Figure 1: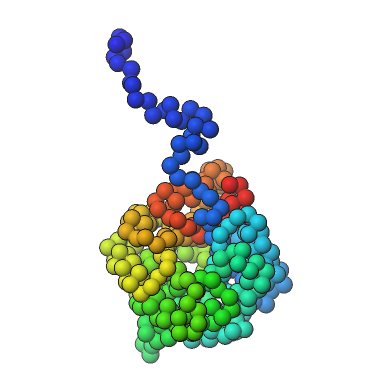
Figure 2: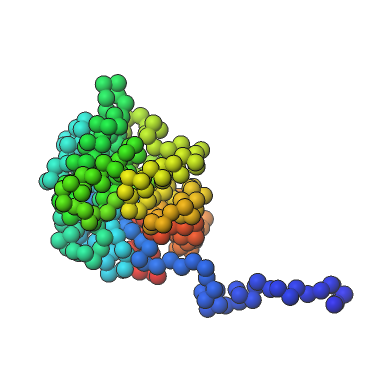
Length: 329
């Protein structure tokens, strides 16, 4: 006893005394293998095109995409998720270029597989929004609404051509009911039993997608609230999760990441398959903009956000900073 009372016997600060001590007792660790690099490849350009709202991110040429894939391998990144940006004149109501074997996404898949083989898990976004002239994730009915079942037929075709082009993983992101089951069947029936499905299980209708629409040259008219999830709902995500697993999803995803860490944690607790989270364009834009203003330490903020996503339960994190962070790790 002292005149000030009893000193504490339990002192958690003892485990924070030095960098080595903090590193030793860290409960969660980022590793390059946790990271997946999303990348955009644009048809008809000879130089990379910077994306104004996503500092440091570009629309790649075919050549620079191959280089980015090699750099990701060298940094220890596990995967690359490809998004194709076709010439505007090639877009139509059905997103035909999305199932053309010579469409930009399929060409890019072949390019990357030829460059890195199996050293990088090559993933492809399986959705129509980059390829339709209306910018929606599916085909429209006579009343201008997204037709779920007609869209599923298009997704089945996309799965086959993307697998033919060399995708190790296809990632349906359109939030159509039944999409995972239809894609799994299409892959199995065309000899692609080994191609995995990464389901966008909980993809919310988010305000943070804005910069991404510049990145893919979106032609979106209206919004996607009738098929992407309402930000207010959590139980609905668990229902989507159960359906995706029943339909054969090999991995599941929550998107966006930071505004939905509670959803991510609940999904991770419930499943025995790998769980991914997508740190989306708006999340990057906020950090980069605040850092440019001098309001935050950019590098520390990046690692803190990624650690938070990992702590919430993500096994895999899609982030535009993947190669940079992997090199640092």
